[in-house]
Structure formats: structure tokens, C-alpha cells
Image (cartoon, rainbow, N blue to C red; front, side):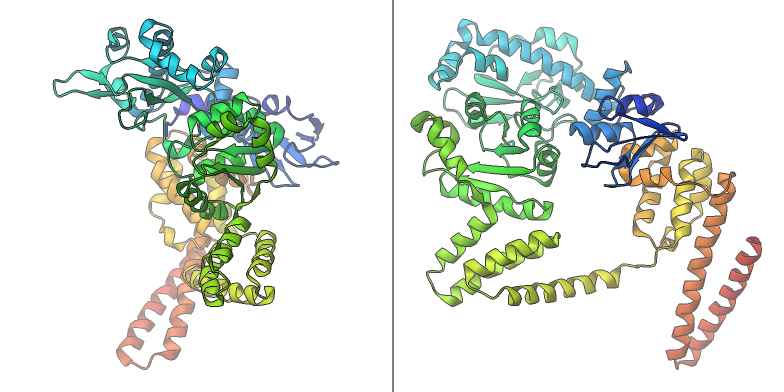
Length: 569
């Protein structure tokens, strides 16, 4: 995904965070900080703190925290990229991309705007007559054409003006054009009804083209680019997000015309993936706006299989959707046209929990054979093991026990045994010793210049760090140090993972000395840990040669520990 320049992000951080938050939260002064009622959970007493000096907010009630960009992400449901662009545009900051690929991102969006103008213009000419007839025959009208920006591209479109406006690398990297064997660009789309695919902020990220002459593929999407990733994108998310925020639910369908038909009939909270199975990223995007998800799949075997394939991703995301299965051969578009919106609403009102629906179908397919039933139960057990939330897991354990005719206690014991084995493996590979000095060391780095951080980390063995999250942060810092001029830029990569450290109070006025002190303690902890390991090894080793080697290492460690202790005096 596109990365912004350090200077652009720094300008955003210079915006007083209170001015970003005040349109959404009434803030009052209390000491040097501002306090208000948290916008992310219901509360009667203010627990939402805004530190204008450091540029961060934190809620002590629900643990929401971050900078101005993070606030907009949570409040408006934007991604990091979208939130940064939103603030830049609101406060008159130029949106600047860092690196060649990311410069492309800005230009590709402009290129798509030009293509959209061409396709819309052609749609209303004689060349677009077939396209207009096709969509009019599907009972859509001018209002729908305008709402969704429907256009048309013929095989003989003159793109000369576009070629003059954009260099070839922009054309090819857009995913809309290809390079011919003669070195000239040509469009991937021709004789197709065109649908713009927009991102959350409403910019055209890609196009979908529907063939009109029966040629394959029936639907063709733009190739992936720096502004378009199929697994992150949902058709109609730009318009659906507001309806989702109001209703707190969303309808997921398979096709673009399904979305358009539902939108036209009042279900404005409808989206569709890009012709692929739902991804974790798409589910995460929907969770920003909706609390309930309903999947409406075509009424064929493929639709049923697609619904159940998505169940695993939902289980891992901690959110189980409702489902509506339409009659065989129907999709939402055809069903509403054939039977009317009232009949569709009746079906929708009877939507059922997808996981429970799956459990019922598995039991039904066993035909009262207990052995087959137990065999079917295994896939349910595997799904239950993926659920981390204890309350949600308990709810489905009870449902599974009732439907399968099994004892709830037996299922709980079986799952507990499986989870215990899994945790034993995890615990063996994970070091649970978390040292405060490691957190303090990482917190100090946020307040130091890049060259000093480089000096502190270059000769440091990160395997000494016991806290996995801190080790991950330090590795990220080392990775991005050559690319950044200000430590605050790491927020772009780590987001809220770094916020807690940035807000942490530093014990000493001299941050560098505090960092050195904590680094020394980290090294000392590591040496002492190794010392204890060697002592344990010495007690169990009978080999004389090994004992000599251990004693030599112990002697060296003792000297190193003494030296570290002396340095710290």
C-alpha cells in the first residue's frame, strides 16, 4: 500500500489533536490535559484524556488510544491511508507519497477519473446504445446509472488525450492498460459495460467491466495496483458505510448487480467482494461499521459452499454472520425482479446464524446414523476451537450439543483438552518473562533522534528481549530506520502498537541516560538468565569435559555481570 512522505505526516501531527477531536467530543480542561466522554463506549464520567502537548488521546475506560490519525480511523471507520488523506485535505496539507510506487498511487487515481469521464460520455452516445439497452432491460434507470457511475468503453476508444496526460509507467501500473509487443499501450477493457470500483473515501480505485457480447470472462476487473487490492476492497463500500453506521448491519452479496438491485430497493448497506472469497481484511473493514453481518448467497450448491468457506474466516475474526439462502437458480437481483421486494424482505427477516445453520445441515446429512453424526461433528469441533471469545464459544457449544444430541459437558472437556495441548506447545516456544526495563527502553526511543536510536540498537542483540511485542517493535524500528528521518514516522508502520510507548512517562529528564540505564538492565537480565541456565546444567552434567566448558563460561559471565553492575553504580 502507498506510504506518505515524512513531511506530510509530520504536518498532520503538528495539527492540535484537540481540534481534530472536538467536533466529536466535548472537551474540558483538567490540569494540563483535556477530558471528555469517550466516543467509543458509553460512559457517564469522563475517562477520555487528550494530551495536546504529546498529540495523543487515551480512554481509561475502554483502552482506546492513539494520535489524530488513529482517532479518525476509529471514529469514521477509515483505514490509516484514508484517515491521513482525510486530515490532510481538511487542514490544507498536500498529500505527498514517498517513493516511485506511491507517486503512482496519486496519479493512478487521477488517471481513473479521466477514464471514468470517457466511459460516461460514451455510454450516452450511439456507441453505448447496446450497453444502455442491456442495463435498461435489467430494470435499471438513469438514476441508477448516475448513482453508480455506469459507463461504456468501445473497442475503438481514442485514448490519445490520456496518453499525453500520463507517462507510460503510470498507464501500465494502473492495471487498466497493457503494453503491446510493439511497445504501445492498449486498454484491457473494450465492448464492456463499465462499473467504477471506489475505495472508502470515494476515489475510483479500479474498474469492473461486464461483457456485452457473451465473451469471457463475463466480468473483468482492473489488475491489482498500488491503489487496488482485491482482498481489501468491497464494491459499494463508499456509499454503504453511512447506511451501515446507522443500521449497524451490512448485507454481503456476490455480484455487482445484486448490490445495485438491493441499493435501489432500500438496502443501501449492501456490498460485494471482488469476485473472490471474503478475506480477513474485508471482514475487518466491515467490523468498523457494522455489528451484524448477513450473507445472502445464490441459491445453488456453489453459493452454499461459498457461505460455509467464509465461516472459518468469520470464526477467526470473532464475528459470526447471519445467512439467507435464496431458492435454487436465484440471486438477489433475479429474486427481487421475479418475486418482489416484499418477498425478499420476508426471507431476510428469517435470516439465521450461519454457524448454527451449518450444524443443522451436518446433522441432517447424517440421516440419524450416530457414527456418521460423530464424523460430521469433527468439523464443528474444529470451528469451535478457532473461537477465542469464551462467551461466544460457550454459546455455540450449547447449540452444537443440543443439535447433535451430545452432552455439553463432554464437548467442553474435549475442547479444553485440545486447547491445553495447543497452549503447551505455545508456552514451550514462548518466553513469558516480561521485564519492565524492556518497555521503558522502547519508550525512550520514541523521544530520541534517529541517529541516537541507531547507535543504541546497532550493537544490541534483540534475542535478549523477553517481551515478544517489544522485540517486534524494535525489529520494526531497525527495519525502517534507514527510510525515516523522524522516529514519529514509525507510527505509520506500527500504529497503535507504538502509542502506549509514546505516552509512557520517562523517569529521568535525560532520556538518553534513561535509555542507556534500561539497555544495561536488559543485558544484565539476559546474562543472569544465562548464568542460571548454566548452573542448572552443571548440576545435571556428569561429563568432565562439558563441566570444564560450563565452568569457563560461568566464570566469564560472572565477570561480565560484575562489570555491568559497576557501570550502573
